[in-house]
Length: 189
Image (cartoon, rainbow, N blue to C red):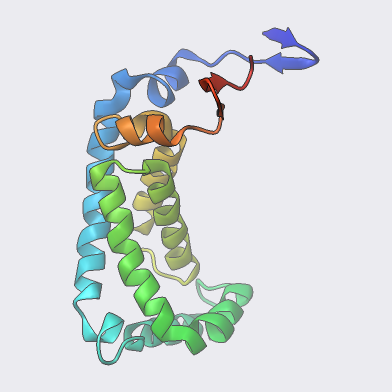
């Protein structure tokens, strides 16, 4: 351990270093990223093309889904009371908006993961949708996709190495760098 100005730095273990910091693990993350991205983009694209998600009767699919979740909550199964309240008072009255958000959100998460562009952000929003579906009482592939998405969020620095993040992150900067007139300087200098 290293102590700098009352800060204790705990060294990273070799496994964490390999998985979350080293580009040697990028091939592993590429496989996971492509799998999760494919799952999202195919699910989202089907919704985008469906009338009851984004077409003439947009919101119809969300209304059916929410009503099913509310029925589970009424029976005391799988859906907690606070989430049932959210579904009934926020999602249901805005079903058309949520239909578009879910359909296009799934497509965008899938694209972000497949292209390796802002991988950590795309994985975060994918995990958020997975958790929302789980709270609504839908299991399906959501637990597996949630686990993979949280791993991708943790590995955001290297998960997009074989993708657009390799260039995008260096262009956009990262939270631990700051821009100066002379260029990019590390924050700890």
